[in-house]
Length: 506
Image (cartoon, rainbow, N blue to C red):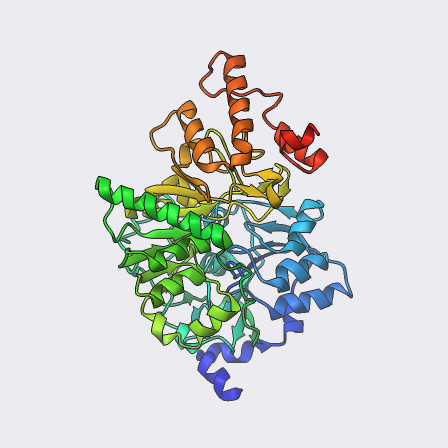
């Protein structure tokens, strides 16, 4: 252990600052604001949160927790259930904290992931009392080498009053060199971000530390919790084929080549499964410029389809994680991990001309997308980076199955119950039923494509009836809606457990 620690902690000045998790937890006081590393259950701190859970059994205190995105169970389940978290942002995906948010016990700030660093920089989030950051190593010259994510860690370290480092001796030494840490300057004084392809590098291999701000170093050997994505199924395979055929048509028209443009795929099982469809396709020499690298990206690297992948996080299932991290040298030269304000930077997304694939909960007949709120009121996970990419990508594509709850919910509805992505930011809708290319179309022109191509057959007649009635009632307004009936589908589901009119009339 001493030999491993010496290899991980190479800065002489910091060796005297190793403390227990319990001592580090004792520094956290009621009302503090914490910036924690971690993005999609990757690179998150673990032992200090567990010590805070134990501390909460003896004294009452609450803190605000800001991160890169969702964290593992140590924070988003155990710390939340212990009543320690007062406010949380900007993204979460664990049932434990989700239940607390929807019961009103935790306040949640849902925000675009590219915006958070700027909010910290301006002091809107904060002041941050402690940055608590997981590290794979600390170099001789005081660079903190992140582990499997970068997220908001650089801005937290830069702006926090003090820093606690969780030095994870179980994380791979081979992670050193994978990161590219570039932090923009203040707005109005910053230089252009000179990144022209996914493999470009702009900064340093680690996060520069102000050694005087490092309060303590805690040793950890807990690995990331595996991702919870589920395997592809018949319907996601069909959705992948629809997407591939759409891209083939774009090539025939001359808008794309077989190497496409850099691809972004959002967090979650559906987006991962659809991306996996590229594995057996003719597309090759693909680049990925995304926020998170899930299983499908590594499957595509193994298949020789993806030549390089850039993101802010790697989050893998247990099976794929064992394979990737057990042979990481095979992948290291094909990867780079960046701060999320770079991975999700709108200007870069637009300049690179990304093909962006994200997941919708529901879509309405005019192309508005709800990605976050079940029935308009209950938070699911958050908007994450989908807004960063959809608004600025060359192609903003949203995928969803056409139905849920065994067919009792239609994912295509008259009006979405919450709007995350307006019709102006949504280019293409893909379900297992087909594709709706909405580019260049007025609202009423989109209706037929969305209903006939994307809605489940059992709901198409009902959707057409809504539109025709609304169109007649309004005299053909630009975007016809019957405001008394627009959300009636959601009301009917809440009352009767189905959106189907035929079932309700029985």
